Image (cartoon, rainbow, N blue to C red):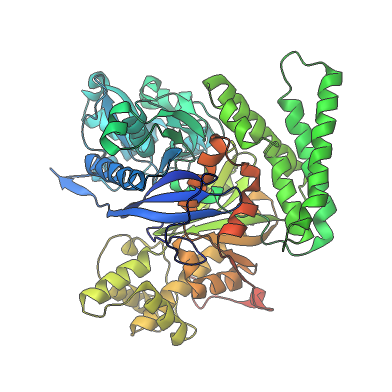
Length: 617
């Protein structure tokens, strides 16, 4: 969740020149503190983002509970669509992504029963012990792949059904937050896979409910809406909304509806590669992955000879692409091979194939299964290939790695890792880390005292302060709630017998270095738990603007860091929508992102592997 807006990472642009070849989609990106409606223009080669509407998002206290004002958020989404439509250019679609785990209850009359609860509401704590008695934490992880946490959807549903027993009669469905807004816009109830995978409700690595877990907890599976793959075109905007907002029949697309899944969809894998030595290996892996994907997705009734001919043609096409794509201006051979590898891993499906595949439920599932199998095949065939991890850095930081299937080991559970879905049917192995929240709260406190610091000011002060002699644990519970964050940082250092920072620059430096240390630990754990060598890190989201954080992350992870895009969630949402509509090939995402946004590479220091933190907490 990164609440920072930017029209395009290269420069602040005015409205781009309009012409009929430009395809326009709207990406609604809702975070826990703000939301925005972004207009994405795609000319077939480059993607340009422009903020149309921005608004605050804050929880509402009512009767001792903590809620989201869903009606107000819907009104803001509609305001953004109206503003975009007023520009007079056709818009193809709209898609919403949000934070995870929260949801709203829908009654049998199709209306929202009450405001959705906030994930920080206290009710889950009252019922967590009983839930874990019925379904112990290890069993939750085995069945769903999700790290047990009281904020998870399954804990919230259990608490709701215990405290509001009338919901069993009154509620027809619950809808995750982006699904709720897609329903309000289109009239179609559906549960998009990536957002549903955040809450402990799906079978590990699958697209079906975790039936055993739900049964043991007494949560009726009928409350779940039909699960659909990422990139499903739900339908057109409701006719009454078209009239109200002054827009045409734009389509509503359930993209990668979890904001982190959208951000990962914009990670330019391959940008880190700089050595042509692996080009042949990548091309071979791409072709092998394509072959296995084609075998899996063989047409019903197709003969072996016909299948072999089609497979050979597709594999040859992938291999040829790997050899030829390096002719793109400014692209290295290995970057090209990395792109070719992605195309093979993704099953070779074009955007139009995606749109056709998701036009009905069964074929949509078949597309996602085939794509997932292709990713697995390519990953398995390139077991020795180095991988690139990602860190989505906003209010929260999420460090992760795309894997062909969930990682359900005891080590993953013990180290706090979770598994969630991603576009194409694969898996994201993730670890949540406190992110820019610490700096945001420090800035809020200092500005309340009259300082007037911008985020750039704090980054500059931290740079000027020089290396910090102290560290904090960003995930210490004392840092979770709003308050006097600078004093909490100082108090932590006192309690751990470390030098106590004083000035804003010194405190900001301690925070930034501590975040970089946490990222380094998370990447090392990812490598150990996944069994994949991690050669580089993509840092996306608002944190990619902080050059000190990026540089220190390269140092602490001992790996190159590629920073950007800043607006990763909106960019990923747009790319998935365009692919679903057949207007772009998702396999070209790295190429499109590299052309559209300014990416910066940070190299580790020559002896970064010898770095040790001054504190182990």
